[in-house]
Image (tube, rainbow over all chains, first blue to last red; front, side, top):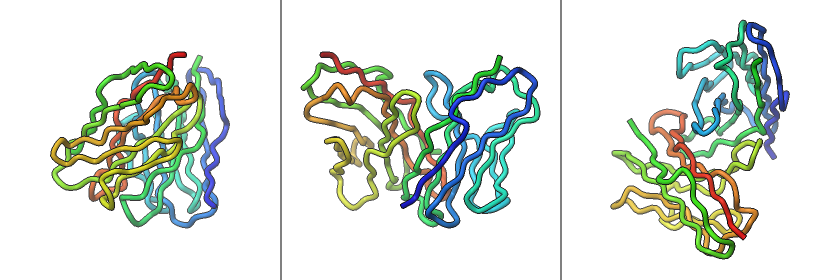
Length: 114
Length: 113
């Protein structure tokens, strides 16, 4: 069966520090991969998605970037964190072919910026 | 562009009462629709999905949803609420022609003893 791993679960970082959040999927090949941010009371905001290695689509201009160095690995990064980057970050995957396939979510990373 | 509207950011029901969480979508073509549940500090868990096979969709934990094209709705129901149903619920529609979802803003369900 397929599983998705996200780490770390919680992270406290000072303003201006770099960021690296990692997400890996097991048990499937060529998944679509997604990064979302969930701010308190504001629903889910799609940040990036990827349909293949090296293929990254950015949804909103921001202080973050994403990379997909391997088929089942998705990394969210920042060179310098802002206070506004605080939030709950969720990684998700779906089957690569059909848009009717559900997305499956990791357990999230709670990021607090001080 | 497609959109999803969840009416009521907070819903309270008594334990044992009917749960009704509303979702309306806008789409010019038959969409694929999903309901997810999120417990505090966790990711989203798929409750059920509509992919045009049947208008009444049964999901996990006793939830079901009915697709009504004439009303562009996909409301989530459960006959009898349990305390363990307290969580946030999200409706989502797949954006046709892409691999993206459009999520509603969520409804937080509170179950009263």
